[in-house]
Structures are given as structure tokens and as C-alpha cells.
Length: 354
Image 1 (cartoon, rainbow, N blue to C red):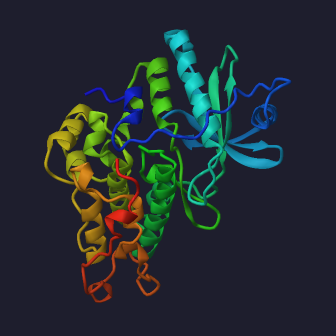
Image 2: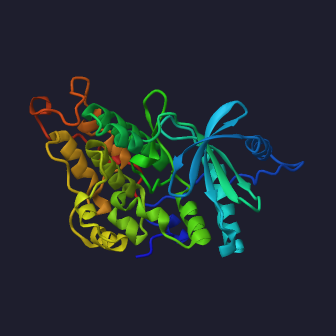
Image 3: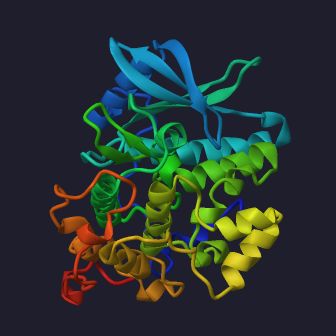
């Protein structure tokens, strides 16, 4: 199963949403350039003056390091370019990615990580693409889970709501995240969650495939992927499935589908089981009724029957006052809600139909 690159034709497909934001300039100002083009040229010069700091780790596409740009801390994602495998094709994908990031940096919302811009590093010894992002000092949800174990239910509720708020914004902008999971949700200095690595995922996959010929990026995300994503039908409600998997991750401090991981199946076989099976990821034991209800709403195999982010923001699991709940991973029976009833918005209040 080759899922490393998704066809551009799917940008207009059904529930999948292309970004309607206007394409931005190339970053080179001309005498007649508009304000955006001149601003991009100034920003390009500013970004190239960055001072590199310590490594923050490695992601699916390369190293991430801390940098200072004009007295401001940023996180920089460095994507190495092996242009020997296809200079012309790589140039096309790089141009597409730079244009996408130039568009994404216009987006501002308290629940998404800011894109500050990108530059191409054309040195012969170390060709790379550098993407400058908002610096998030507390790292990712995945990193916190690995260090400290499962989140308490209070935090799970809080972060679930904040993730939904970020998804609602992106989906309203006709952007599908396509890789929602703990590793791509970062925590800021105030302890709030923000979505990272959205929007440019498709271009990064295409670039990686062109420059490396591999499927590396797909391996770590299989357990969060909705069945339809494997069939190249990713849409807004694919992010909802991934959110459900992320809630399981926060409660258990483990990736979903523990049964498939225990069997140590090859990636292609895991993909086949997720796509062709009838099961959903096993739900954690002893969870409150409203949490179970929420997961059952998000983890529906038929993507057309899943709710949108806007609808889920009215679900009891994320709206009820959790101040009295224990901070242990699971609430005790006496603290659980007495009803499994969920509150949803009417169909008219949902996001636009596919």
C-alpha cells in the first residue's frame, strides 16, 4: 500500500478542502510590488540572519532546532534536500511548499502554531529547506506523556476542547490538518495546546518522496489515521477520527491500536487491517460515560457519519465544568457523570457540507 504521496486531484474532492487563501509573492520585491511582496522580501532577509541554537529533536521530515531571529525565539524545521534524486521534480515541490507556507503564515488563531516563513538553503554541502515556526517551550503532548505518563481527565478535557477549537478554525479556512496526533500538538508557556504541522503536510510528503523515494513519514502516523485516508480521501472529518485517537493517547500515554502493535505487524499489513477491518481502536477501560460517548462519536468508520469540529464543541465531554474532577487519569465512579447523554448542535450549525 503506497500512501506516501496523495494526488493533487484530491484537493477539490468531497470533504477535503483546499485553502482558499490568496497565493502570495515569491519573496522578491520589484519596484511595482505590492505591500505583501515587499513585506515578504524584508522577512526573507530577516529570517536569513537567524542564529542557530540547540536541537529540539527530530520529526518525520528532519531536525527541529531553536533559533533567534531579530531577538525573538523561533523553532526551525530543517528539511534536508537530496537533490541528486531529481532536481527538476524537487524544485517543483519546493516551490509548491514555499508558496503554501507563504499562505499559511497569514493565519492567526490562539489554537494554532504560527508559521513565520521559510527559506531555501542552497549550500552545496548542506542543502535544506528551513521552516520558521512559533517557539513552544513546553514541547509536545507526546513528549509530556512519555516523561510523566497519562494526563488527568481534567487536562484531557481541556486539551480536547482546545484541539477542537484549532480544528474548527482550520476547517473554516478550508484546511485539513491530516496529521493530528500528540506529537503535532504543542504546549505553550501558559499550558495551552496548539495545533502544529498543519496545511503543508501534503507538500512535505510529496517533497520527501521526490528527494528520498521513501514512505518514512507515514510510519509514525498509521495508528491515528482514519480508514479513508489510506484510500486518498482525507477530509475535515478525517481529522475528527485522528482527534479521537489522540484522546485515547492522552488517557493511556500510548498510541491507539495496542492490539496491532502487540502483533508487530508490517506497516502494509497494519494499513490493510485498519482500512478493510470493521473495528475501531479499542477504547480505554473505566472511562466516564461522557468520554466514551465522545470517542464513539469520533471513531466512526464511515466518515460521512462523523460530526464536524463545530458540533463536537457542544459535546458534554468538553463543555461540562471539570473543576471538581480528580487529576488522576480516570475519574472514580462517584465522580462520573450520571448520564451518557451528549449534546450536539443541530445539522444547520455544522460546518458546510462536503
